[in-house]
Length: 218
Image (cartoon, rainbow, N blue to C red):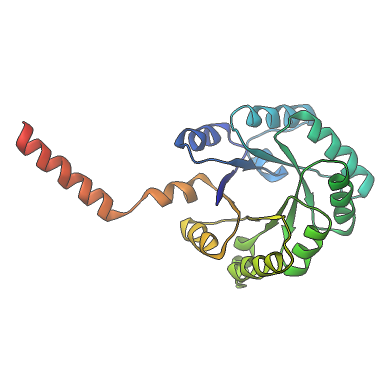
């Protein structure tokens, strides 16, 4: 499973990169705004700054909702850096744009996916990644993990190469559950990755080892 961090915060991205397990970054307009990154030129520069920190793919989202606008934005984003993956919404013109980008060698991430049918359309259109938002489904008392399982079954049935990028990860158990279900990628906050480090028995065991070492080597 690949680990992506879902943020536009450069310090958090650097921290995750230094941990040695980071495979990429996902961003969106909301995350950019959260960091105070506004204005087209500043946003484009920020994408490049992110690419210069990480080694893997960086999803950069279009804001247009019509085919021509998405194509124009997507081509501009793709030219920024070879690591850029163009993030396209799951709408009718978005599916058309996915197909266009696929035919023209531009990698894509289909975002805001909430059903198996949407994921099937994205794969048929040639998306490199599909982003089911399991956390947002959980928020409305719907089983987000079941969506991951259904997409995995459909993709395996037909040999689709589109990677399932489990998005809207809320916590560490989401990461574990998605790994069990065979999601190719997870993207979430740094806390969801850091949480994998933690276990009380690890802390207790380490404290005991250090205590015993100190007794014999003081």
